[in-house]
Length: 284
Length: 344
Image (cartoon, rainbow over all chains, first blue to last red; front, side, top):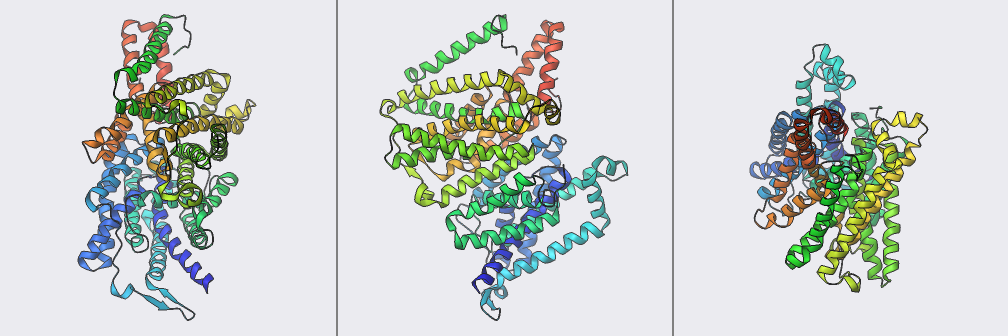
C-alpha cells in the first residue's frame, strides 16, 4: 500500500517533470542549446496561472494564460536576442542565464516573495478511493493531463507536416533549409512551444509544489537531470527520464530524506560517465 | 601577447604589474573599513572567477557550478572549526573535500564538452547546494554554520585584506605559469581539437581531469577565504546565483584574459553590494549586463580593450599588427563565448 502510494507520488511528480522536460528537450533537439531560462519560464507561467485561476475560478483559463504569457515572452527572447548570436551555442546558452536572472527578478517584483499555490477547482480537491486507499485527485489529474499532452506531442511530431519539418531540422538543419523549409521560423516556433510547455508545467506544478523565489532554479535542476539521463533532444528520453527521476525522488524523500538530492544525482552521474549522450540521445 | 620581459611591451606590462600591486597594497591605508572589506570580497570573487576562467580559456569548458566546489571547501573549514579542530586540520579537511569535489567535477569534464559540461556542472553545483541544505546535522541546514573565526593573526580586517591580496597574487601567478607551461599548451590543443590531440598520443581525459583539479583547488581557496571573510557559510554560497555570477564575471572581463576575472569581479560585486542599496532590482541590472555583453561585446571588456589596442597598433604599424592582430582575433573566435571573429 505504501509502495503503491509512493509509486503514484513518483509517477505524478514524474508527469510534472515530463511537462517541464519535454519543452526543454524539444528546444535542445532543434537549436542545440540548453535554455537555462526554462526554470524562470516555469515560474512566470506558474504565477500567471495561479493568479488567473484564482481570479476566474477556472483552471483551464489559468493554464491558457500561463502558456500564452510565456509564449509571448519566448517569442520576444528568440526574435530579439537569441537570433543575434545564432550559431554560437555557448553564447546562446549564456544569454538564457541573463534572461533567467531578469525574469526571476521581475517575478519577485510583481508577485512578491511569499509562496503561492494553485487553488484547484472543486472537482479536483480531496481524495478519491482507489480500493485499497484514498489518493489525492489532483495528483491523478496531473498524470492524466500529462499523458494527454504526451500523446498530443507524439502525434504532432510523428504525424503532422510541421512535426516532420521539425524532425528534418533536428536531423540536418542545412539539408532541411535546402529542401525549402524555413528553418528560422521552425526554430522560433519550437522555442515558443517549449516556453508554452514550461508555462503549462508551472501552472500544473503550482498545485503540487509552491511557487516562490528560487523555485525556478530547483525545477531547472530537475529538468537538467531528466534530459541528461534521457538524452538531450529526445522526447522518449524525457518521458523515461521523468518517470525514473520522479519515482526515485518520491521514494528517496521517504527513505533517505537527507540524501534526496544525491539520489537523483547519482543516476545522472552514472549516465554521464557510462553514456554521456544519455539513454536515448544521439551523438551530437 | 608574448611573455618575454625583454621587449618594450614586456617592460611596460611589468611596470603596470608593479603599479597594480602597489596600488593594491595601499588600499587599507587610503580607504575605509567597509571599502577594504568590499575590496577583499572582490579579490576573493576574482579568484573564483579565475578558476572558471582557467577552464574556459584553456580547455574551452564553461562551468556554471564552481561555487559548489568553493562552498564544499568552505563547509569543510567551517565544520572542522565548529568541531574544535586546529587550523592545520581545518585546512586539510577543506583541501580534502575540495579535491573530492573537483574530482567529481573532473569525471564529468572527461566525458563531456561544450553545453554538456555546462549543464553537468550546473547540476553538480546544485547537488552541493542540495546536500548542504538537507544534511543539516553537519551543515546546519538552511541556517548554515556561523561564528567561524579567522586565525588570530588575521583577525583585523586590514590584516585579512593583506592575506587575501597575497594569496590572490600568488594564485594568479601560479595560474599564469601553468597556462604558459607545456601543460597549458596541451590544454589549448585539446580545446582546438580533442581528436587530434588524442592521435598525437596525449591522454586527453587525464589532461582534462588535471585541469579541473587545478581549477577546483583555486575555487576551494576562494571558498575558504570567503568563509573567513563572512565568518559564515550557508547553502546559498553553493547556489546557482553564486555560480552564475562568477561565470558572468569571467564573460564580462573577457574569457581567457588575465585581468578579466578581476575586472568582472569588480563590476559584479559593485553592483551586488553598492548599487543594490540604491536599486532594488539589481539582479535585473546584472541580467541586462549579461545580455548586453554577450550580444555586443562577446569577448568581454578585456577583449574589447584588446581589440581597440590592436586597432591602434595596426594604424601605427600596419606590418607588425597584421600578423599579431589576426592571431588574436582567431584566438578570440575560437574562445568560448567569443564571436565569429567580430574582433577582426
